[in-house]
Length: 331
Image (cartoon, rainbow, N blue to C red):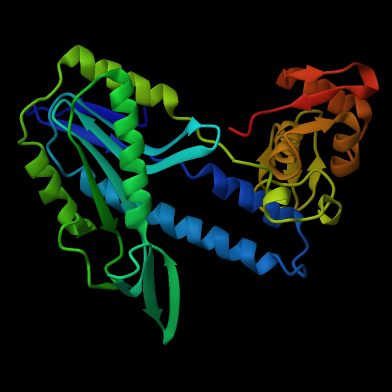
């Protein structure tokens, strides 16, 4: 659980939220390191990275306001919940708050400019920024889908507890027009007051039911990449830069000792570069790789180096010797 709950010397419950960077941000950064900057897809990758960073910073800002709130003793906060409800449906929730009185689903957006809700087209928003008008999916649709997913899980557990939802805008540099009055839409500064009202609600489930509920969501939370990025962006893997690269800046690493490598560019030291680069092959190219793939894309000092570290990674495998295929779920 990525929260820390403790009591200060006055008996007040203090909550600290630790939100990890999105797995997809790491994955896209590794793709950026390996794809030539003159490729047409490169600007789109950079834009996706910047959008993910902005979203992450907005979510972290919302966390700081959540930490201001005096919650009941029985509370669990799950940042960045990812789960597959079934093979074709993924649920991603920015922040899920669970108490014995309510569940709150938060969708957090870090948007600037002016956005306008469209009454006759509720699935889209229009944003105006720097005289440029763009249309994008309305986050209220995603919020409704997530709430429906939560209710399905509650039904399976035979638990009856109200589920609330709220759309939170993290940036101060935003004007919102035509917001639906019946929906919970707030600027992040308003979030603590909303939470304080919810915390006054009476309990709806018992303590043992609360523990069952929180354990269920904790076990369901699996951060993953839906499919390798070369497939997602229709990139030919052969255009990727080859070698054992620095995961921080993308330049080639130099071997200092048997287990220690250093980047001449950013000076970062990597004590497990082979494992990191093998892991990146799964993220970028395929969930199934061979020894031949590792030798081709990583160009290691020797075949034995790859063989040694693949064995240490304890990857599931099928086949024998040169026909062995190694598999890894993209978690």
